[in-house]
Structure formats: C-alpha cells, structure tokens
Amino acid sequence: MADAMGIAYFAATLPLAGGVLGSSAGIAFAASSGASTLAEDPGQFKNVLILVSLPMTRTFYGLIQMMYMVLVYIPSVEITLTRALGMVGVGLLGFFAQFISAWAQGRICASGISMMPLTRGKNLMPTVMKAAFAELLGVLGIVFTILGLLLVG
Image 1 (tube, rainbow, N blue to C red):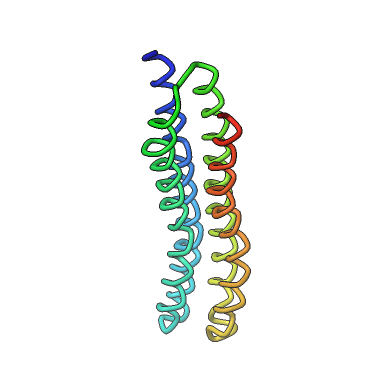
Image 2: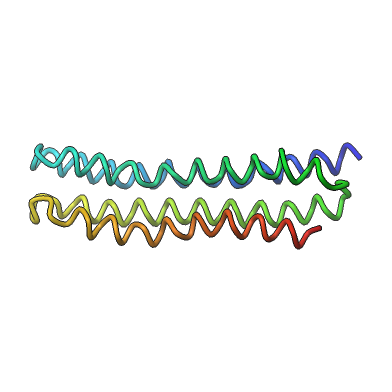
C-alpha cells in the first residue's frame, strides 16, 4: 500500500521536525540573551556558548526517533493504513516532546545567561542543572516514541 507507506514515512519525519524547530527556537532565545550579556561582560563568552548550545540536542533526539522508525520499525512490520495513522500519533508525540523540551530549555538558558554579569558566571552550573530537567523531557520523548510504536503493533 503506497498510501500507507507514505503516511508512515511522513510520521517518521515528525520528531525530527519538532527537534529542528524547537532547537532553533531555544537557541534563538538563549543567543538573543547572550548578545546583550556579552555586550555587558565579554568575559562570559564561554559560559554563554555552553548555555546557548544546550537546546541543540533535541535535533539529534528527533533524528534518532526518525532513524528508529525508518530503519527498525517500518521494515519489521506490515504497514497498514491503521498502523500508519498510529505512527502519525506517535510521531506527533515525538514532535511535541522535542519541540517543547528545546523551547523550554532555551528559555531557561536565556534566564541564566541574563544573570551572568550579576553573578560573574557563578550561576552556570545551577542553570545547567535546571536546563537538565527540560532535557530529560526530550530523552523521555525518545523512550515514549519507541513504547508507542510497540503499542501500535
């Protein structure tokens, strides 16, 4: 069934799309805050660079989810229309997990970056620890995608 296969491959791209969009938004938030922080205190460049880069990982998480769907799941089952539509639901779960996780992490990092001049960079590790909570949701998105595919059949 070409139609069902097309839907299945579309579903597989959803987590990657969420990761790319979320990473872009998260990095934009953090980088915008970083620009003003560096204008005030150029010595915070290393700390700003670390925090700006954190939301980027959701793109890789989305890629992992897509690769699993395309290379492991689709070849191992018969893709029916029902199964393909189930994959769309699972793909949307992956999309939102990666998008919201990266978006939220970018906001957390932006807040931490804005306080760098005031704390002289001492808030780097507390900010990274808070950002790890948002990161965990992206990791759980991978797990839930795989579990969701098991439920789809």
